[in-house]
Length: 148
Ligand SMILES: [Zn+2]
Image (tube, rainbow, N blue to C red; front, side, top):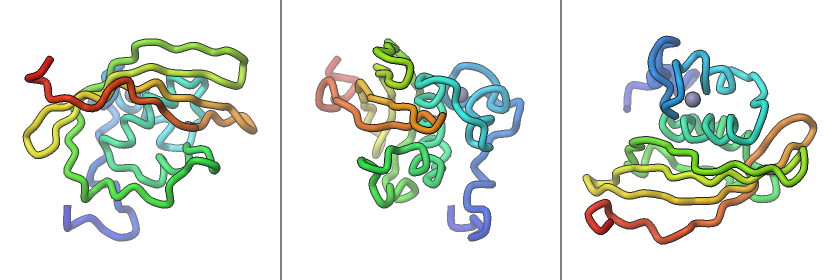
């Protein structure tokens, strides 16, 4: 990863338009690629998927821009943490009002050769037409796949 240029740090990681989207739904250009390029996600699930793909592709500016200002960290340090994302499964989506939603998901990943799963229910709100991530509740501490 040391050869990435400063002006366009993620160009080397972005999939081709016809590649499968990291979120697993369809081709990248027809899925999360649209939102990474600036289109507004139409609903919380689309935003959730595009944020998962953003983690896969280490699109830190995208992740921060889709994070609610009240809960947004200053940085994520994605390239240094060694996480390899393996897949996303959306379990449940609920909208209590037109501008709030929760998305329950399981994301699988590996760190240092060990498999983990993250089971989280995330809260999203729509402000000014843009969906953004507020915060999430973990369902259980991450466990290794061997323990399941
Ligand atoms: Zn996608």
